[in-house]
Every structure is written in structure tokens, then in C-alpha cells.
Image 1 (cartoon, rainbow, N blue to C red):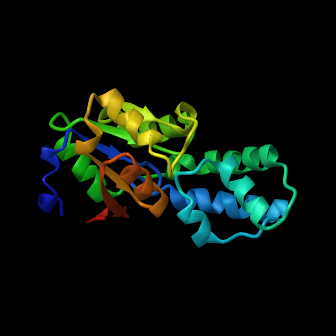
Image 2 (image 1 turned 120 degrees about the vertical axis):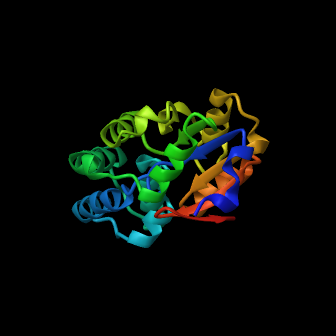
Length: 198
């Protein structure tokens, strides 16, 4: 699975978290569906999946504008996050990604650049055991310009002391791939552990 990529030639491996390293996207989407129904916001699972990497509040604002609706963004975000947090410990690392992380631990610096708030990211890393392997995490709380801007991934590279031009970003959405490319990094589309250079 991983031989063709020669991961050890990179300065750093940088992972998105939700949907890339861990199977948490269905949990997010279930919380979105319930909250959307409660707030009268049309729900499109595929569209929301594509927005992975963008913080909840920003997505609510985008969707409300698209549908011409007045929605209390803060109340919506609080409710969605509360529902998600009830299920968060169900998130699991994709088996192929676990293999990749364990194989390169101590050989190639690794970090996470996520659109999730820091408390959610840390909760997932702790509950899955990833925190023993990856110590550098840049969350939505740490940057102003979120994906598709490159700031999240550039900050991970900076904290790892890596040259962005020689970093490899793992992402599961077009928005995330765009962010990696905008940072001048090589990108891999990671779909449930299956990898494809893009």
C-alpha cells in the first residue's frame, strides 16, 4: 500500500484528521443532519462532506446565505458540536493509516492540521491513542484563515521545522487538497485509508 510513496524522502508528513486519519466524518454528518432538521436548514450529506476542514460556524454561515435563511449561527454550532461530542469516542483510526503512522513514527516528523477545534482534536487523539505518535497539532483555533487557505498546514510545517516544499499532506476533501497545494506541498488523497497522489 505505501511502498510506492517513499514517505521517508519527505521532511514531514502532515495529516488532516477527520475523514483522513479517523473515521469521524459519519459522526459529524449525523450531528449535522439532526441539527439541520431542528433549525430548518436543508441538509445535503455530500455537500457537507465536501466542506470537511472548514469550521462549523463558517459552514453554517455559508449554507444560510446559500438558502437565504436567517439562522442563529452560534446556537446552531453549539447544538451540532454537543451532538457530535456525545459520539466522538466512537471515532477510530483507519487501519491503513494506523499502519502508516506506526511504520514512520520516529523516522519522519508527523503532524496534524485539522479544521476541528483543539478540544475535539485532542479528545480524538487521546481516545484513539494517536497522541502517543503525533504531538504537533494545529487546529481551527490556531489560525484565522482556514482551509482552503494553506495557513493550517504551513503552521504544522513550521512547528515541525520542515520545509513546506518537501512536506506531504494527506487529505480526504478537495478543499484540503487545495490547501496543501496552496502551501506548495505534495498532496495525497486519502479515502478511508486508500491513498492516491493528486
